[in-house]
Image 1 (cartoon, one colour):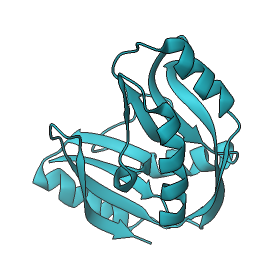
Image 2 (image 1 turned 120 degrees about the vertical axis):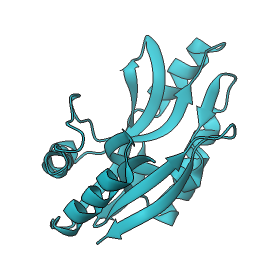
Image 3 (image 1 turned 180 degrees about the horizontal axis):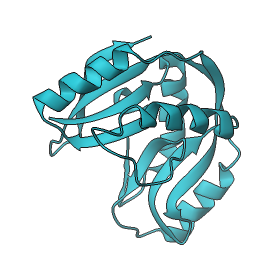
Length: 176
């Protein structure tokens, strides 16, 4: 099973993000479906049923204080000259990334994190560009956007099935 840990987005914020995504609708840019919006905590990739059971067991032992964060600001991976992913961040980056790192460490026996964790909520993936200047201008226009606030108080193990219409996520386990 292809799996990852994520933090779901409240419905009210999904609607605001969906409206923002409309500005990025251009050839070669694929927006994330509102129902698929989430903060990425840990991507496992393909895991066995045995590993999935270990993940669930570890999740049962996770306890953290709810954290209120702003959903704000636009960022890109890897950089503005070569945009592959467009994401929204948070002003509480340091606190949120500390929490994400703490959670990630608990799963190192299943998949050790090798990349630096960046708190991000992916809104678009760039396959190719025909309007690079328009895309860069749209990113810069919204770099300080304020979407709203949310409380991080749950963690979800998602199964991700890749289809020709994009990924389909199914909640496997939720902890509050």
